[in-house]
Image 1 (cartoon, rainbow, N blue to C red):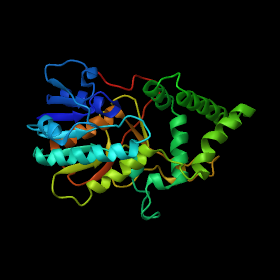
Image 2: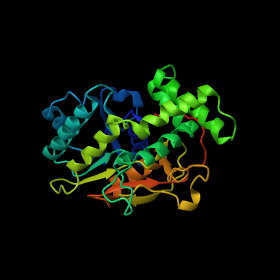
Image 3: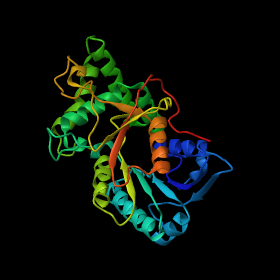
Length: 310
């Protein structure tokens, strides 16, 4: 198959690109810097800024592929929400105009539903769930190191994340928090519980885009949202698929020291295993019209390079 990856050098896209190449497919990488993935005889980089490209340019780049995997992530900025939705709109129009047989979209955890006990609510609607998610990221060295790699270890945001992780370690070990650690936890967690704008633009923008797909039968699509603990890690080669609902461990796994109903119950998957699930779907096309996620064993939590290369 000839498969185009939008965002081939990013976190999710790089692993999907590598998995498809391992499976023997031809891969076209489309982004501003697709050459960052590396060189391979079956890899063709096409340098296009998806955010500013015209629909006609996208149609030309897309035409002739058997499938497209959209792993596009917009650059940070004050207009992120608007630019993300507008870029997705262009991509969908171009996919249909180029007569692409199948589009697989990597969305965000925030669009997964909380289940029948919380009708109409998604992960991005629940302050309690989002707090558990932020804690789970901080409790993972692999996830924290990935964010430092992504935005730079010297960045004030990554420094704040590292400080929060260190405070969480002290807390989990049952030690006395210093005044600075108490302040760090309060500054990180209080806005999630009390602020009017407690969730970043990217997860709610990704959640909004699913409305462009659900119920849309004018083209063939599949929308995969990574599970809560999505991080760098080894490829186990095994995964389980869950449709629509955020996967959680049973109540018995809940952290007994926390009053948060989700602490200790979040499940996850490595980028390598989710890439396998996506590559399998590109080949088998069993989840057309689905919103789904996948979970797998996370055997270790070691910091590793988050971006795959050829």
